[in-house]
Image 1 (cartoon, one colour):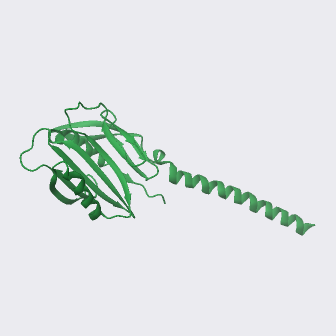
Image 2: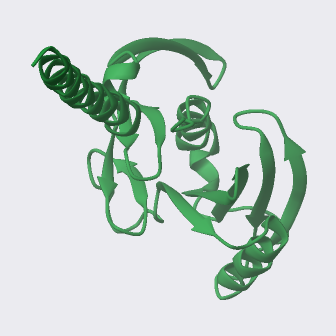
Image 3: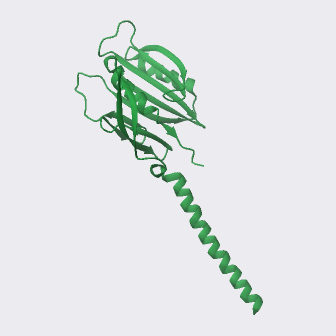
Length: 205
């Protein structure tokens, strides 16, 4: 009887510990994999320089739980529109038709290289009459490679400017595609780069 009682107690204890352990593991996994918004400040203030003037701006946290990244967005001027393919940051107030598109799109791609994606980008911009202005490695606003596309020769106020940033994160590659026009380089262009400084891929482990 004593041996049987000890066996029952041992089994019961093991079951209880197993249930508790499972609960802890589940909670931990959920915290690691699904709570990016709880891991970072919801709002913060940044300083940026626009056309020679220093400006203090409040930015709000945006997250992509599936692709495990965060970015802070100036929600007084922009909003983030999410789809299965990408997240796109666009002006809060839609621009008039006379203005070219203004946006910053974040896309995660797998099983490819930066060189392959640069080749694809060159094909994308050909129909707009854009050529490579420069290709450089950068550490700011994010660490990776940037390719800037513009029309050749003198720029008009509405000349297109496309900037592609490429960031390698583990086995995946993040492509950030900025679109704006020449006159907006010191406005939208600077604000996009400022927001991009907060871009962070969070290791799920």
